[in-house]
Amino acid sequence: MTVDLARLPGSALVALGARVRRIADGQRWTTDRIAHAIAAMIYDETSPRVALVRAYRTQRLAALPAELNARAQALAAGDPLPEATRCAVLVGSRGSEPGWNDAASSAARRVTPLSVAPAVRRIPLVAALLERICHPLAAGSEAAANVFYVADAVGHAEVPAQREFVLRHGIRSAIGFGGPLPGGEAFAVVVFATVTIPPAPAGELDALGVHARLALLDATDHGVAAAELAATRARLLDDLLRVQEYRFHRLADQVADDRDAEAARSTALHAQSAAAADRLQRSQRAMLNVIEDLRDARGRLEQRVADRTAELEAKNRELEQFAYIASHDLQEPLRTVAGYLQLIAQRYGDLLDAEGHEFIGFAVDGARRMQELIEALLAYSRVASREHVLAEVPLDAVVDDTLHALDRAIAESGARIRRGALPVVRGDRIQLGQLVQNLIANAIKFRGDAPPEISIDASVAGAHHVVEVRDRGIGFDNRHAERIFLLFRRLQRKHPGTGIGLAICKKIIERHGGTIRASAQPGQGATFQFTLPIGAR
Image (tube, rainbow, N blue to C red; front, side, top):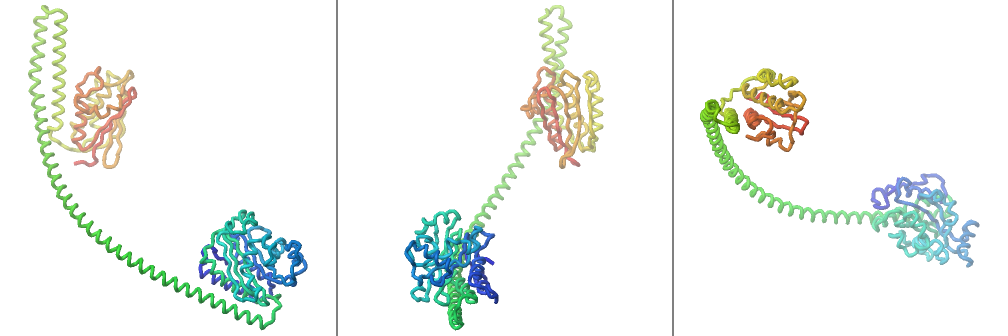
């Protein structure tokens, strides 16, 4: 079990402390083994938050083994150390480097003389931490500074001597905790973290130091009398109680502060909610007023649209009636003009020269074309004036009638017509026949050099039948795809026609509740597509 040093939640710290205190679990372990196990508990090899954990125990120089004694004397740089010199001995180590997982393998860091200038210069950051935790014991004080904290390892005054270690491993914070042991010695754990540890969580480690020292009381190699062990255990339990009481009071204060802050937030939120409710109520009243105004405006607009629609329909009927009457009445004068021109050519032809005959021909031809235009306009006006008689109409039968009516044009042009399955629609059979005949006749008329090829297919899209008439004729520029459905609009002047046929198609389709459109490319033919509602009534 490990703990996140960046936050140090109280529950996790309490659980870790209890486990540290029971680390030996009744086994007869040495101080070194217990210290190494404590370091292993704090170090989490699955997380990069901690780079190195080291545990130290202080001993006097005279009590050190010969190897460590010689190492400590060497650090004094030729100035012999007194046998009473207190030294910090590395007894446990865990870290991200392989050589850091065994205290014995760290020969250069096994021992650190305390309060000796050369040693401080040799390993300054560790020595500074240990001095802070362990030095008060030299004066016989039991009030050790149990936690030492460096928030910014890079900015620490002693880092230049250890810059390679700090920068290479990304050390951000360093923290030490521990305290006195029986016999006037001390125990300390130093943690080098790769995250910034806030000051508040750092203080929580005091309790972890007490738990660690309680665990060390069960070691087999401290050489302290049972009475002193009991007295030390009693003091540590008092310290643990003090730490827990401090944490409890701090937690109580925090809960009270949180409660006050929550009450303040609740009051502010209530005020904000009341203000928001008031604004919402005003907005709702304003919105209701707007809705009423829009409803009134919509009613007036609908009435105006209905009136305007009725007015337009009446005018359209008048225009259609006028076009019908005008077209019908104009035919008789045109027939008279054409007839008299032909009589002049017959009776006085001998008196006219070639130019006179040509002029009469122009006049007769103009009268004929005018009559065709009038007849086409009359047919256009009849689309709307004709009574709309709807019935079930098989489009196959409509195409058959059309092919029969265009039999001569089909034979002369050599047209090949292919049709797919065509539906039964509801509509005016005569007008649908007029529509199909205009489209097929146009495909024959605007053919290229090769015999025309025309295909007729149908499909379903949503609630509409879609009928497509495609040819391989001369086509047209697709920019004019909408213009060709206007009255008297002709794209090809060299072909005969009035420019009304496609306008009639559009009017027929719109009268049936559908749409018609065209697409084409010059020299690649044209496609006309119209829709008819399914089940229209």
